[in-house]
Amino acid sequence: MMLANTRLSQPAVASKRSAGSRVIVCKAATTVPNKPEPVQRIQAPAPGAQDDDKPYLNVIPNNGQWHNGIPPVMGGHLMSSGTVAPISTSKGAGIDLVPHQFQYHDTETDVNVLLYVTPEKAQAGLVKLVEEAAAEAVKAKGAFTLVLSGGSLPSLLAPLAASKSVDWSKTHIFYVDERNVPHSSADSTHKAVSEALLSKVPIPAAQVYAIAEGLPVGQAATQYEGRIISIPAAALPRTEGAALPKFDLILLGVGPDGHVASLFPNRPETAATSGWVLPVSNSPKPPPERITFSLPVINAAKEVAIVALGEGKKEIVQRALEVQALPGALPAQLVRPKGGKLKWILDVASAQDLDIAAWNESKQWPRSSF
Image (cartoon, rainbow, N blue to C red; front, side, top):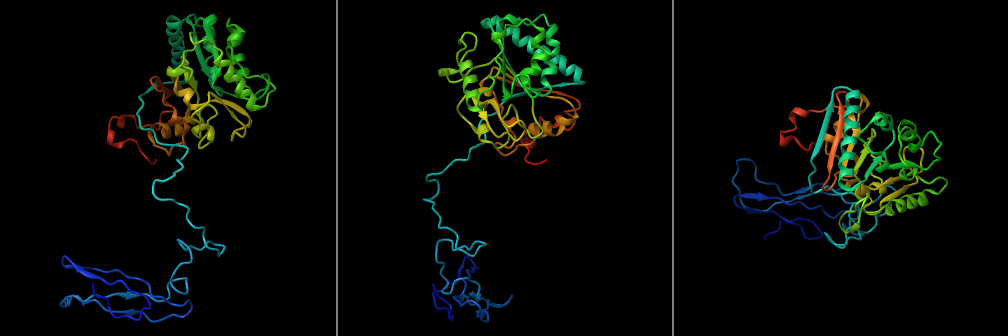
């Protein structure tokens, strides 16, 4: 390949003709900082002029930061402090990678959205869901395992006190998450559920699994997991290999940030792939200490229902059901029961931003922007 005549102190890269066109590769001249030089250029043929097939090259002076044109280290980038950026430690593409704590799912999950006209009808639908799950579980194995969350959910379950379809003597109540506070605290989910429901039904005290009081949060999580492990598989079956408990029904709320249980966006607890009950010592929502079921336990359940009612839930409902978030950014999207059922219980107010009519248009989903 021919080289153009230039004043460079190191080899230059010229262009060559290929398939009737000319590829131009430019390389900076070696210059000394603060000593500008005029542009040296071998001109290309003017438009319309005959192409003489000679290579040409632009020389751009004084555009480097190194006195000899060679960076002192790989990359050669200067940080804002003026020091040279650290040398790359990469061993090469795909070698010794550290995977991100969250990954996209490679499977699909069917979701049933139960939409009710009013909050009252949604509450009635929720009560019916619990009654049907209880009857089916007791018939199949003689016990019903129900997992509850806090927030507005305990008050929605109050009508169950008058239900004739739930055999409370064969019902076991658990909490998908709980604050590490005394049972008498206003922050206690157990207190809220007891006042709304449990104090009004004949359920044996030993079948209500409340957090142990007065323990450090790590010990509280371990103690709660131990109680679950002690339940016979006849009442609480395990998944294949006895890896996880398989609860009959888990009822979840969803926060405005998309958190479920005490699994908050982009937190290590949300990314955990092992453990049944996890300690949370610095919750972004007070109180800071909590225990929570892990996502693998939630996703091992026979049935999971996410309850979101009222206008205050409309934004997170639309985001969770119609917008594909980055992995971990919306924990509600990580609820994907393996072999189980997933339902969302909504009312008109919480569903008002959904474009349900377009859900069958597969090309529109998943969306990646609002």
